[in-house]
Structures are given as structure tokens and as C-alpha cells.
Image (cartoon, rainbow, N blue to C red; front, side, top):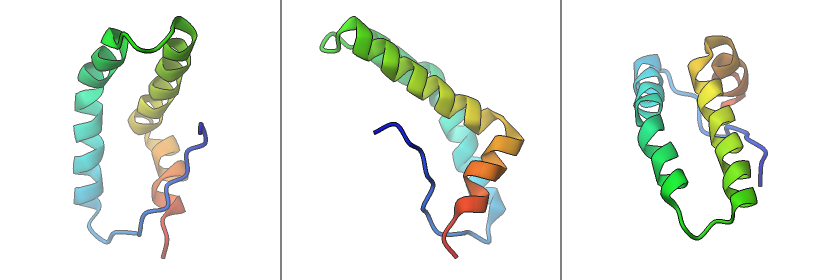
Length: 76
């Protein structure tokens, strides 16, 4: 599965969403290191997984993309 679609409920507390977003961004180096150290993935799978995660973190870091693909897609 490579399609991302946020289907969580809308939250009135924007601070909570911002806090979780920053936590994920802060964990990026650790998450990427886990993937890099994985010995069970072949080279091709590791490369695809790395690109997928990099796009996820890029989305988190970009305010406009985050608004468009996450906060505007919540279930009301």
C-alpha cells in the first residue's frame, strides 16, 4: 500500500495535532535509521520504503501539504 489518506476525526484542538506532527518530525532520524539497519529487506524494498517514508516526512514538514492532505481530509 502506498497511498496516504488521513481518515481520522477532525480535532478542535489544533495544538494536539501540531504536537503530534512535531513528534513525528523529531523521530525521523530514528525511524530512518531503523529502516537502514533492517537486514531482512532486500535492496530494492529498502529503497522503495525509504522513498515512501521520505515523502511522508516531506509532507509533515510542508505546512501547505500538511493542511491539504491531513487537516482538510479529516472526518467531520
